Image (spheres, rainbow, N blue to C red):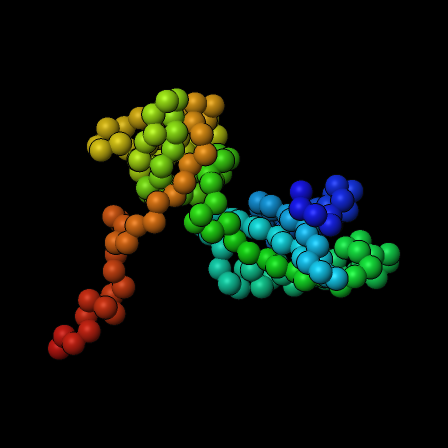
Length: 174
């Protein structure tokens, strides 16, 4: 835990934030509370099946802000000093650690430690029990207990993605 946030304070904030995030249809991936000078920063990381849009982030931010402001008015849940709320998505750089992370990244290229092998593979399927990886055309099922954290590899021109239609038709006569 970061400096400035007690375990109890973080737990109280999480007890307020998690139901709001869940009710909005998202998963609370992480909650961080840190001191930043005279302020606190409350960082809420959310995710959902199908990903998160900026509108989704704005919706969650408004809902979380309202519940924290209400609680803060009743006794300073975040602390007596002002706080800054940051709501964000998981982003591509966060490790894949839970089955839902793997299933939300089907078709993505990942690096993952499986036993004593470091693999670069494409996720072709993921269930609550296993991940199915394509390693140079070979299919391999791996149970989560055998794997380390996965890291999504950034790809430009990822297979299976179609270019924006307006790009392919620009300059063509009908």
